[in-house]
Length: 452
Image (cartoon, rainbow, N blue to C red; front, side):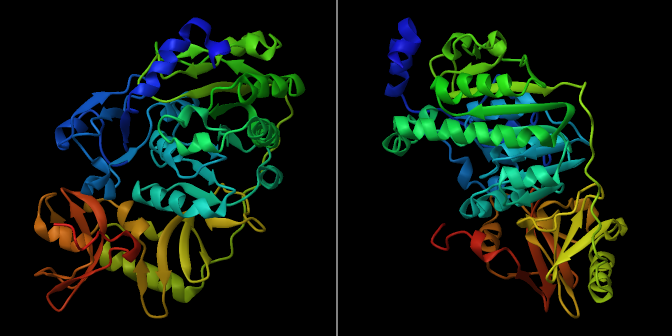
């Protein structure tokens, strides 16, 4: 680093004497970011390159322990890690792929940009990390996501020229995270850097045919060395002349990438961005925006055909909607079942047959023989005005903590499924029976009973 940064090295080194800054990003699927500071007890400061995001004082505040986090109002994320999704700038109605998605920070950011419209494919090759990805997307109320557990090469065969935008936050040596996560430094080696660069090039090569002509691809890492950044991109562009670098609408604190660190093979690399901890409040990141040239033959993936939902399952689902929701159009659309689990899928989605699928679409719940059990995901992606009955708590209500701990609560509400909310934001399901609100908050999310 000393040889790369030269005169800037002392300032860079000094950042390791201070604690990393902490930040969160408001989930605009749930609430507006302009009014958010007035709703929470946190001391907040805007993140310059991501309007819905704020720094918070980690010594004073613990937003991860506030009930609004459980309700999906925000995602705790490093400020620099928000830069790649900002560069891709997904739009409502587009088809977007987050190729290395877990744990879901960038995926939920893309989902906020898309506002529930279009197709968002979140892929994670590591099966051990899928659970966190699913939980974060469900918590944030994302309805248009497909969650896959596949290799990039396998996806390329199924999604030819399908996506308007692709985000590759590539596996890397993690040098930019050494201050925040010192354990990462213990796993670093020159050999690891070389292996990461090989893998990154393979991922880029597999992703290229999935992007439509005119589409956008963002490649990012959280590492400093040129081998995994400028040099990987230079090699990719030399072998893929159908792509070109586009400038990123960067914040003043972004620094240009260095073409000379890749032997000046691609002068346009100065349009890519580096985020250095001595130039901004955040950790290290590299971000480049590529565009696939229009003058290429276009192919389209065909929409998949899904078998019809069995009549008994369709019947209990429609009955649940009629009993629980004010609007019955939720029972319309394209649906599919995996076992007895019901999902709503996007009509333009190609067939997923043969792929490792974690979620083919919006998870609605479980169709039992005589009734329907709604999913936690359905609760968190519903609006209070959509349902016939809600039970609303204020954030400081002691009964709210009991609900989060899995307790049943006395209730005078009518019998049936009830959307439990906090200050009007969906939190989970309850079911009223015998003057009790029976608890359907997921067991794996319940709060510690020792909390007071």
